[in-house]
Image 1 (cartoon, rainbow, N blue to C red):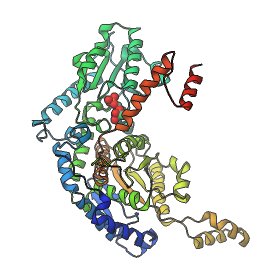
Image 2 (spheres, rainbow, N blue to C red; image 1 turned 30 degrees about the vertical axis):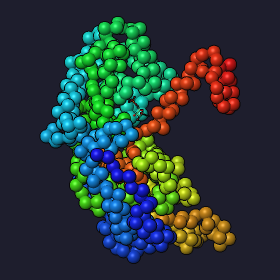
Image 3 (cartoon, helix red, strand yellow; image 1 turned 45 degrees about the vertical axis):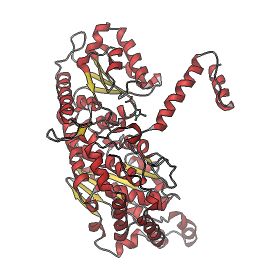
Image 4 (cartoon, rainbow, N blue to C red; image 1 turned 180 degrees about the horizontal axis):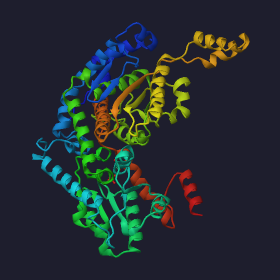
Length: 545
Ligand code: F6P
């Protein structure tokens, strides 16, 4: 089955939302809070070790009622059913979208073309377990009989960002192996990594769903050449592993079948860290932690599938985001984790969210007449406070922001953690309240600033406030809670794609870039340059001179 093709702006509820927006857009959060003592309680969801407070958003109970009706009108419930059951919801590629199955229980039954995929998933998981255990405990050895000390993940996009983000996020749980990532086709990247490595003790994991990606194959080939300067062809079997759907290409590259981890075309690259693409994660933190990550995601899957929409974190996150994107005209969303371990989290979600919902053609093949995917950006707090928060506070743009924090730090330094979290709470409060002119004047006067100066300075010190934020407060950063957090954002993507009537699981825009680069590479390598516009032509001529 495929998803319906409802234009959201043609639904009855969209009209109502537009009217509601016009009537309420100027309401200030400060007033909404002072007129309702139960506001925080009303707009908070507690689930597992997550507290999701969305009360600091420019919404009322009426807004949420209408947004929830929008979810009903676009048949979100049946879309979720299709998503989990292996329906061909990636219609343009004729594929199911089943990252949820990757973290499903062994006893689950998920059919693709009439075949239950769970036994195969668990077979690969068992292989990951045995392989990672033997690398970590030193049973598996390199060509000179030494245990592995370093692992290099060679991949790009989803074959890099997920493993890189999670490996960094779970650094606290890491074992002795040093993990490196090579992604960019920029040779300086691979050579910089290679210069630190000993071929005798390094394991290379080539990760590519298609095994045709230029960056990954170039890097893998360069690494193979470097390796063969020290070892022989037969040693490749000991030092290279591969994760891919393309067994033919892996064999051509010369990787031993024992070190091949299959994946499936129903796993999208940007949702693939739960598959064998997460091999590097399992190597870095051990299989048990990798499995706990999957379990956390599975719990979020169950929450998304079963919780009433009014109590459903991904659904509420998605609806609020639609509210700002389509009615307030907000173009971007910031994601700010107050955890240095999550320093790659926003970069990871940039691919997940923007590659999925950066579409302008609807499911019926027509150009949309409304906004779709938001621009995602962010860096950890408190660093970001000293970088771009000025614009969020006092700039002209409305930037809905997610604040992600943890009740407990991992190293248990209370002094630091209290300071970190004081900033986390203070920022959302300040963004919401702002600072009125009267407050600014009072503050300046209390510092004995002259009347003249108060008048001059006051306009610059006023903060309008009314800046929306979500607060996601989690007990502790563990493999399990991280798994849940990632899955929550994955489901938010899904909900938004359903509402916007777009296909979230293809990425034709990226494919175009791949083709174009191929043509220009020939122009660079060959004597003759093919036909281009005058700018590209002159640039190529200048580059080749
Ligand atoms: O960037 C486009 C893309 O297709 C991503 O979706 C994917 O994660 C990445 O390229 C890498 O692809 P592959 O795993 O096939 O090398």
